[in-house]
Structures are given as structure tokens and as C-alpha cells.
Image (cartoon, rainbow, N blue to C red):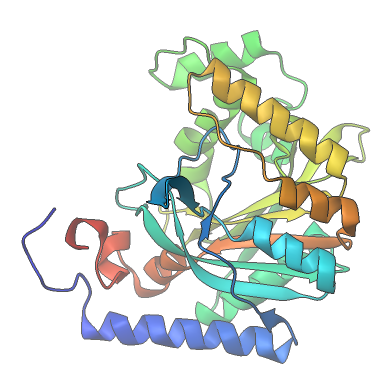
Length: 321
């Protein structure tokens, strides 16, 4: 922890963040999307094997600072069935670096009646208003891999994928499954080569569905109806900005996915967290057909203002908090 009492960012960046937040609120007000507040502290946490919580203790109980407002927002959706957004702080343990801070600002919104492709358009509209002359690109996960290596990521075997990965990345690959190899190729090879602009990649492998529904694509392949948006303002500086879903609405399928995540956490020797039964009850009550997306506001500010580190745009980055 730093001894410096001074803020991390300049007065100009404080004003830039305030303007960004103001623009976001104006954007959704014009579309009659309601801003909501949800709890930051909760008794459950996500089952995602790659996300760890910041915890708090009160009256002998352990609580979790939320990594996303998603579960609470879906409970609001199930009851009130209207388009909503939240601009809020979220927390993830162990995340620090030039693009990460354990406390960060997330913009998350849900659009009733839209699918993932329609939501991509809205994400593009928002970002294009903040970054002039922004080019928008769109391609499927299959196209992304095929254009680079002429392989189909949905069909390639683990053995073939391992040969390709080992030829490009020096890593101890003990225990890496197919999705892990695909993720490594994305982060090490594909993401850095993305063009300047906002690139949407959609139709992920069904095994990476998370909270998205699975639908057969034009080739008859089951794919996850989710997308990721990558923002680059200069060659080679692309980074993930947004992650969106055509939302899963089936409580039984969601319970199965939670169980799969828990089993994977157990296999990796990771801590176990209680399943959010309130979310499952909300899904059983009935989630409206909708699409949702989470967008990293600090990363958007980074690219809008040409910053090299996420901490430059924070009032107090973690080392000074």
C-alpha cells in the first residue's frame, strides 16, 4: 500500500469521468431505460471458476462484495419486466494490473424483447457517441479462428488444438482443456491482432455459454448466443470491453450450469460458494425474453482518453485506496 495520500488521476480526468457518466445516463434516459440500484453486499456469489470474491464479515456471517449486479437485476426483471440499467462498483479479488483493478465500475443493462445481435447494435451506438469516427466490426467466433488458421473451433479436437497452441505459446499445458486452449489463443494471438475500432465476436462455443441460451447456428452447430466487444484505438491495443448474452431463462438449465461450475471449481481445488437460490426462484417465476450486457466503464475511459493504465483514470487506484 502506498504512503501517498494524493489521488491517482488528474482534475481533467475527474471531469472526463463525470462527463462519461453523464453521457451514459442521458443515453439510457433517451431510450426510456430505467436506472436501478442493487445491493453490492450479498450472501451468495457467482459460481464462475475464474472469478473470486472480496469478502466481508458481519454478525458472524460471511458476505460477498458482488462481482456483477446481474443476479439482483434479473430478480428485478422477473418482477417488473422492464428495461433497466445499473452504473455501479463491483469487486473481484486478485485482479490488478494495467487493465485490472479489484474495485471497478461496471455498466450493465438489460433490454426486454431484444436478442444479442440487436444489443450489439445498441452497444455500438453508445460507444460510437463517445469515440468519434469509430469503426464497427462484427464476426462469428468460427470466422475469427478460421480467418487466422483455417480451423473450426467448434469441431477441432483437443489434440489438434494442443498442437497448434504449443506451436505458438510457451506454457505448461498440464490439465488444459479445449476451452482453456481456445481462450489462450484468443488472448495471446487473436485479440492483439484485432483492427482499430469496436469488434463484436459472437456465437461462442456452447461450452462457454455461461448465462446465455444455446441455439443451433446456420451450420447446425450448437452455439452460445453471447458476444464480446473488443475496443482498439490503435493497432495492437485491443482489449475486451463488453460481454453480452441473449439471456438464458430456464431455471433447470441454469441450475445444471451452476452444478457444472461447482464441479469444476472442486476439480481445481477452488473454494465453493452457495448457489443463488433467489436467482433460480426468479427464473422459475419467469424472466422476460431479453438480452443483457456488462461493459467496463474504466476501460472505456482508458480508450477514450488514451490512457495506458486503468489506474490513471481512477480517483484512487487500489495501491492508494
